[in-house]
Image 1 (spheres, helix red, strand yellow):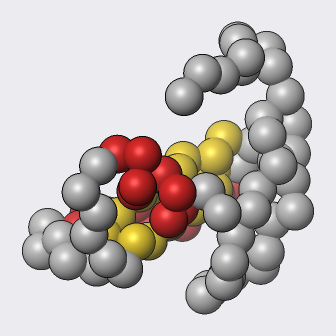
Image 2: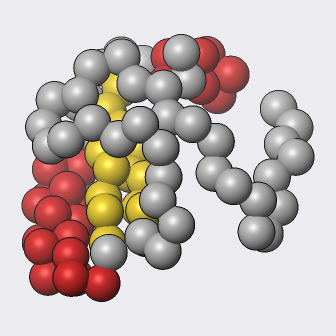
Length: 88
């Protein structure tokens, strides 16, 4: 997988199958800080980490922090298979 993104490049568009909570994002806004977090529902340590990230978002929302949780619901054998599940 090659990318032509560099420092200063505009972020790619967001493609999401289902938004579970919060308002859908159609694109990234200049000046906001986005933290994408990739988790699996089979991960036992992900719950506490997500709680802490939600707390950080609330604490720093005034400066434009936006945490985006990307959740996978099945295991894959390779990274390419995992990417195919996330980036549809």
